[in-house]
Length: 222
Length: 178
Image (cartoon, rainbow over all chains, first blue to last red; front, side):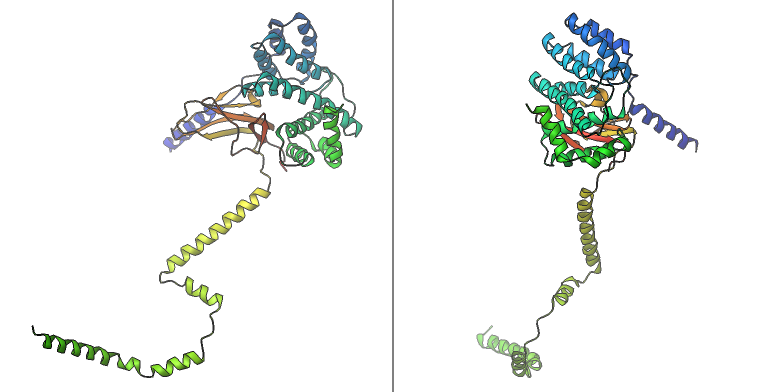
């Protein structure tokens, strides 16, 4: 009996030790301090600093991903670092959640893709965020949000992000499904976890090929 | 031995054989004529199947039957499961596993770690590498890197996303997963 208990305890201890738990997210100050220490122009720092600070404080940017993003940019040539940083800054300035944008840069770099690929995907995603917000406002799926980095984070902000991301994945990945099927399937999978039914159901009810074509054409059209 | 004696023995042996088979030959001609006049009806498919299945060892029949059942069940299960959505993994500890026999280093990269590598381990040396990561509800993109090679298609993933010719796997944690 005692031996069984001992083995069980050992097994549980091993199980707990084998599980990866992430270190606590760094504080906002650490991220902003890192930004100030980067070898980029003081003008860019002055523009990005306050917006990033507001975004980090309201949850539009996570401190862990922001620190990794800045850390990765600091290893790149200055023009490239500033170019990527300004795209993220513009999205944050409009009030979008930018964790996805920063993660996208880290992912494409981790894949070993050239810088042109990084900027292409970053611009595609950024354009789609804006286009999705405008179209969902037109269709009255979302209301007018804070429109800035400092306002409270709303559930509709997450909805805009997920729709823009699904459309972007469809454009970049070119799967076999139609755009509507692809986006609907994605939203259904997210329903109940990151998107509450109250927010996503009105969109699911009104999701049409025209609405999605509107997002794509607004993002890429003239 | 003289040839005459041998010939006599052969004749006796043939006579014996003919006499022994004679009863079976009685009425043979009549039977052949009757059969030609009334050919037997062709056997039905069921009868032929039954005959084919009736073998001396009943165990062989059972084995055949069970095998057939398993085949049908496996096929039906596979077809049906493809139509059903895969339930999302529950929030909390999530295990990522990859078979990479002979690999020296296997890491997991994903948006949950800002694409920073997390080491996988093969504790028992069987070539299966794994790591458990605690994840809150959400949608997560990830890939394995095996000895520096990008492996973006995890068979356990809910879906894949392609970016610039490379795949990443996607796992949904929590939610309804409809």
